[in-house]
Length: 103
Image (cartoon, rainbow, N blue to C red; front, side, top):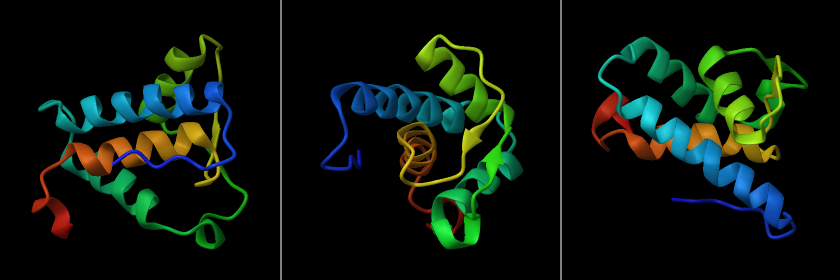
């Protein structure tokens, strides 16, 4: 389920939507290793305190944001306040079956 912040701009919502779709597509791809999907699910389930102020250079996430923004980026803030991060991890979580990985 799409999960916007009330104060996000239209461009932040659009970034979320594009990253959400990329995450969902990636999770549903039969070529995607289940360990990789589990890693992203763990990120999705983590709270911002446990994630800290880290930046992720996880290739599927970076690729999704690069494609969505048209800018070449090397990392994404690991924060549920960031529309790209949240969109990707929400898309992965929603893109897999409910009984996968104990969800």
